Image (cartoon, rainbow, N blue to C red; front, side):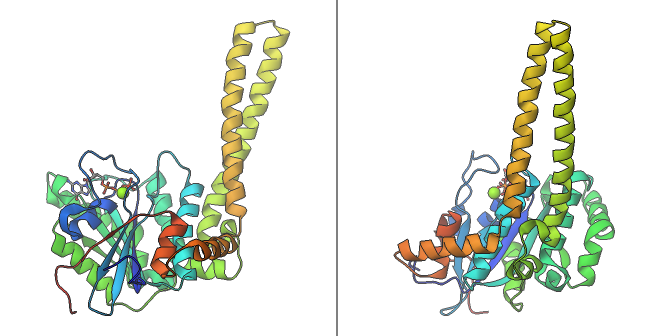
Length: 322
Ligand SMILES: Nc1nc2c(ncn2[C@@H]2O[C@H](COP(=O)(O)OP(=O)(O)OP(=O)(O)O)[C@@H](O)[C@H]2O)c(=O)[nH]1
Ligand SMILES: [Mg+2]
């Protein structure tokens, strides 16, 4: 399959927090493990899209998305990044079949950022799209006792995923077997196309911070900005005290603290600006530019160019003709 032959008739996004096993999952489906190289750290930016053919007329793509809960980027930055993937797919008219959301069964409690990511993800999809979402637990082979896994699965259901199951989603397990991964992909490919809540909201002209998912991030970002401002005021007062007391060592120490506080504040402010941007309009411009400069008008080629992805072309499924 040449690069520009396929328009990627439809697409499935693989999502989940950093280290949940997204690249590993995709790697299991494709021949020769083309996208996961030994020795590469989790989170390494490598090939993030694989194309497959179901039959002569139907091709599809699996997209490895940036991990929620990245230690080096804030929630706002990650949400913006993931949203761009969804907006580009939508604006290019690529049909979305669903999302496989990966979760490590080895994580012993759902708390803090994991919970926030679940909530953000839920709002990003919206109730109407849950039928096209599968929560897939990974790393079962690392559990000493499978019963612990079953209990955690039940907790996931009770604490969080139950609402999604009520609307057609379900929880499944990835046991590392390529056939299991293929079956999950096939399940989504057999579904009707889906439109996500955030895609609808952005179509209506909302800014990212006005969307249901974006508003969670925007609220905590405002709190962080307020806290960080108060911290700078406190340090400022302490510096004034150190100057009055002619304490040069303390003053120097506080000035360093002030520098750090300022750079945190600036980072939060930048993220706030990004959340206020009209993502839809920006993406439309990007697509326009890439269409002009790209040799191939194929939607998948433009998708990769706008998002800066590299791809692997292969026959994902070892059997065709479903
Ligand atoms: N034993 C075991 N290891 C796994 C499994 N899934 C993933 N891993 C390993 O866990 C590490 C993280 O997996 P990745 O696939 O890189 O995770 P990711 O979700 O792509 O992470 P990011 O790219 O950071 O978002 C890798 O070393 C994988 O080989 C699994 O089911 N069992
Ligand atoms: Mg990865």
